[in-house]
Image (cartoon, rainbow, N blue to C red; front, side):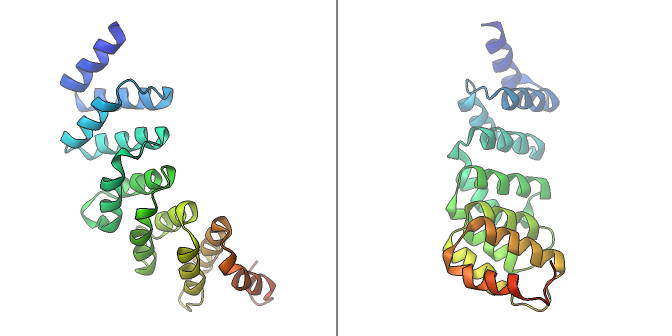
Amino acid sequence: DEYVKKCHDTFAYGLESEIRDLIDELTTNGDMRFVDEIYDLFQETKNPAVKQKILSYFTKLKDPCLEDYAVSVINDPYDEKKDTVAACFKYVAAVDCKEANPGAVALVDKEDEDFFDEALTCLGEIGGADEAEFLADYLDRDDLTTSQKQALMKVLGRIKAVETFDKIASIAQNQDETS
């Protein structure tokens, strides 16, 4: 197959831009023929743009092969590009990787503006009762902005933890809260 040979050659000898374009094409088409090669490329490359494309590819496939990498980035995101960290959050949410929850909770708790929204969104997708209780308690802070409170409420609604129902109901019934 000429296309398959071209893809193999691109992975082996292609320029960064050619590899990124090929991975975009494979992601769009959901083509799984090159999973092993793409995984091997991920292990070898030092290029953050290629890593992000590969993360997007495996996110679309919902393939858990990069969980360890993604969790390690979320646990310590400060040495990575912000786009790579965001791709890791999307990836762990897509593959439902509960091991990322402690790192996401820690980033919410640190109030790091660079990662707060992505960590919160991730918790909304993969968080459970423990994370919901943490977020419900987090709502009691006086230093939260209106948008942060709204985001927290939205995430708590997505998690649907019974343990937080009373807290959400009391906030919803409080006339002094913003809509």
